[in-house]
Image (cartoon, rainbow, N blue to C red; front, side):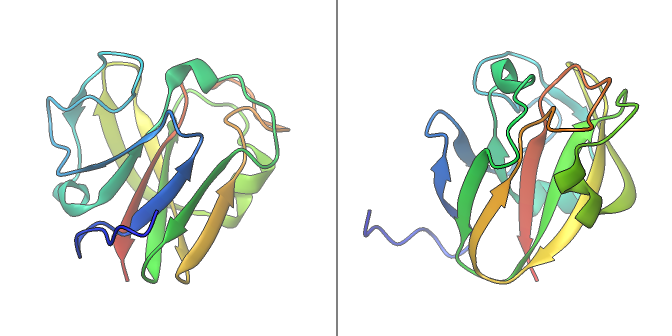
Length: 145
């Protein structure tokens, strides 16, 4: 779109377009675009992250390529995924569990991390094979590395 984002916003061009880029999420912030669920608690390091607020209605998406966005800088991308999952989607296997949890109204989210160079990132759907047991959609965070 030709608009330069503020220096601390490192995520642009998010698809699907119903998703929103957000900053400074803390306890009490909503983390989906279509629900009023709020974050109860989260590790303080994530309050400075750039977030992608996803749509919980997409929680059953099985596509191997679903969410795309561009990073304006090299970054650690975090995926906060439903802690009730009994099997993770294959695309998440390249991510490392951080041991962090975001406590939230829609269910607790375990955090996984992966380094990306600036440029385009594509993530799969929440229930891409062989995912099982996840009842809420994931949320994405990124921090400059």
